Length: 129
Image 1 (tube, helix red, strand yellow):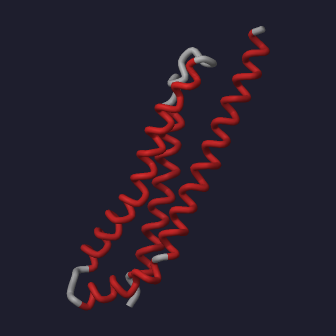
Image 2: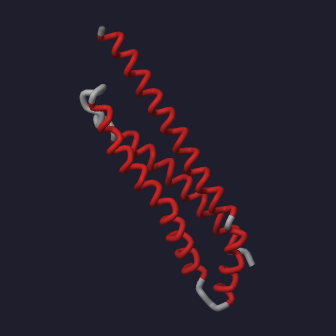
Image 3: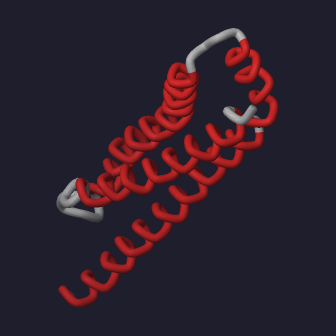
């Protein structure tokens, strides 16, 4: 019986990790490409601010904070959704929150990589003269 349950719940855990990683990649990629698609439109605004004398360091800080909000809100909403959604699995699992720190750390690392790449590409697009 133990082997049966181990196989069943091991498969559920694998599917959860796999689908979670796939959805994370899709979410972050969609955000990244949506932001970068609008970068050409924003290029004129940043060029105008640059001509008005705003320091490049302030422009970069503005870009980082704007993109942090655009990336941060879905991340916080997703974390809250997972924390409340795991309540449904209390019927199947003894402690659904056991070991939850590992997937959250992986989520944060992958999401930060997407954020850094997006900021870098966005700055290259809008900060050119």
